[in-house]
Image (cartoon, rainbow, N blue to C red; front, side):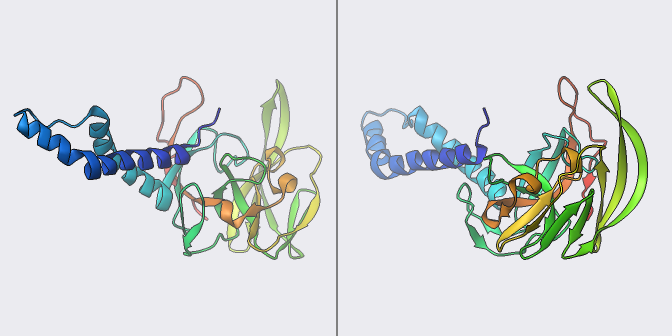
Length: 260
């Protein structure tokens, strides 16, 4: 079961703040007067004490996560080789504008996703965060054919890097790595010897077409189409720690800024 941490955090801030406020306005003075009259220490109820202590901390965490930066762990191989399973990345939530927590409503327009950005978002078919590379901008015509991208009629440039074997289910599968160039941006991609998911799409307004760098092992816009502008979370900017699944210690060997 996935926990909606931003929603839980928002409710924690609201509840702790409400408890502290109501006590300050309605109960604190009378409780202090009774304690003074009885010549006893003026002690807050434990729930009020916890609310007063935790509210500032929770509010700070919510503000940082909502408007500045948020950590995210890579759960799948869809962005290999750029991002590996177990990478913890830092997401810049200010890069594409400030949004209200939970609601996602933009309150300050700062910038827009650029082609080649690695973007975290909520897809149309799932409530969890996804991470993919921005391929198509609003108004773009996208064609994917024979493992190659065509954007507005222009074929992306591909530079062969290497061929190697990936072991899947005990069998060796040949994989080819290419450097894909989209305008001024370039990044590595993997190609597997599987049937292509060919298709063409026209990106609507206020939407984006995204794909994983591990093209044949990525669930992306080729299947569920577009990312709505109001579902954008932020821009991935750095890997800050890596932990392989299972009983493995974290490592900082992959730390570094993501280049575009």
